[in-house]
Image (cartoon, rainbow, N blue to C red; front, side, top):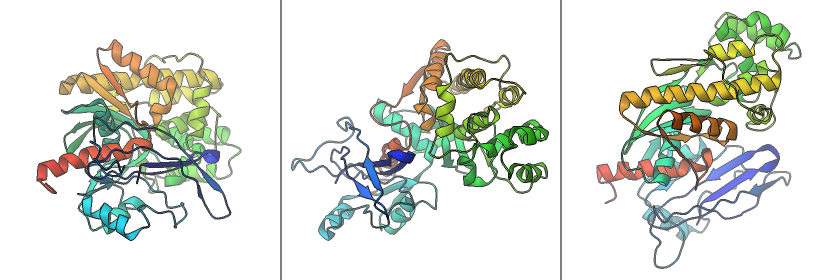
Length: 395
């Protein structure tokens, strides 16, 4: 039994299954799966060095760490895809050796349902806390760690859609210290596939919905959705950095619909030659980073897409660096973990790290494991092990 990671390269479709049980090393293996119609899921290869975390057993079998962690197993996967060995004896051994099941806080994920049905103690770990904890595990940070997690979506402690969070992770617990300024999430999950929806959300936040007809004239549904936003009819909110990228891409006309995860953000990044900072392009107050001044500049008529992309990346990086520095100073922290899928953006990451160093802070990045959801299981296991140690469960 090993740590598996799959993705469908044609649409950046990823399925990540991680099993971490009691006391064994693990790594990734290439496995090919098929869905209905013969579509192939290609393997993702990433070696994970567990030596600092997990001692290998004498029999050489690669199976177990100290808790069982299973991350995001997407519902669209073929239902016959096994989470555990098919062999009944092997399945029984996995369950006998496992101390707990660590899973995401989201109640509707397949992995959460699997955890609840396992018969083992369940440790639910908030999505962004797991991103930060994964870096703590990799970097060997034992004490409190300040971290920022920037991604598309994670189920928040309050049930809301989070995705731009600054948190303090300490042992088995985490605390949200701030977040990106919220935007409306028109259509809920559909907004992640249609950046024009987040463009409308940005215009709504700016009080500029009158520009919707001009900017999104090619989208038939935009006028009706603008009307609903104008009347405030039950639209959820999000603090997601990924959706902020989508809003910028839509306002600049870079991408209105996307056909794989992160397409709008990737195309926006690809335009950048040299990031630039917009004067007074953000505000930091009360733990919240407000990017509305930046969005206002991007929504002005005649802004070139490349110019807008450079302003967006440079200003966002500067704003996040100031935001982190403010919170770090208030909590006496000198290092900060940077996790989440947005850290796959090289322009943002390099600019942000430079800004943090200029402010006397030490950025900690994911290196041995991915910064995106591919590293979640490590963070989940890291927190779960500390909860088990604190409660004495399984000792």
